[in-house]
Length: 311
Image 1: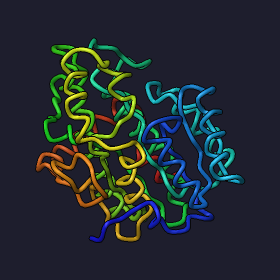
Image 2 (image 1 turned 60 degrees about the vertical axis):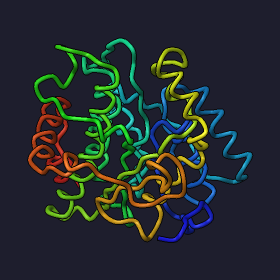
Image 3 (image 1 turned 120 degrees about the vertical axis):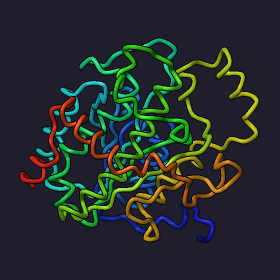
């Protein structure tokens, strides 16, 4: 694969995209690039002031860009459902869904509005429910794609079905790794089920390598061991804009493949232009994927099968 840059994004005029966590960091850079390529972009997040600021920054960069903001808190299934109702009242179809939002390695165990461990609930279950709710709109889209943000952390993850919510034993990094492995499993399983059921969408995944964002500051914080490691590894990092390139490749490039996984091509996939990324075997375990799918449907009360019937 030749070196792929932001200039290789094809014209996106006529495409409608939803990007979660789009008021800053990777999500903002993804939304900015898609808007710059001509797509209409719905930015979502929890903070309206940040949403307005993000729209202003995109509009300053690309006057006339078609961008809007909608409130969405992935730590609340009610908020996910409410966003979906508002979205489907405004739009008949959806072409691109980027499941980007996330929290990282919270030092203390917190739970979502629905009682889920915060990282598993926000990073994964919220996106699972959102994607299911939006399936009818995606099926009416033009060449629809769903991109899940995973992480290098998936390599150290395991789905602990006996303690998914960290109630017996909570460890910040373990919970984060599990959530990011779940996102990659979800991307692959969604493609598997789309192919079997004829949903006609492409599902794939990406990771940013080590991008300089506020994820650590807003999670474990800049102090302690995590902060020290972050400072030591800074020379191996790249900007949020560079970190968004694998996502943009997955969502926009004609070369992206169903159930593909993309990340930087440099040392340990920490930085560099997009390329196919390493997928751990546990992420491709069909039995684990099927079980996680069923557990997620039970936990969220949201069924892809019912959504498919509504399409």
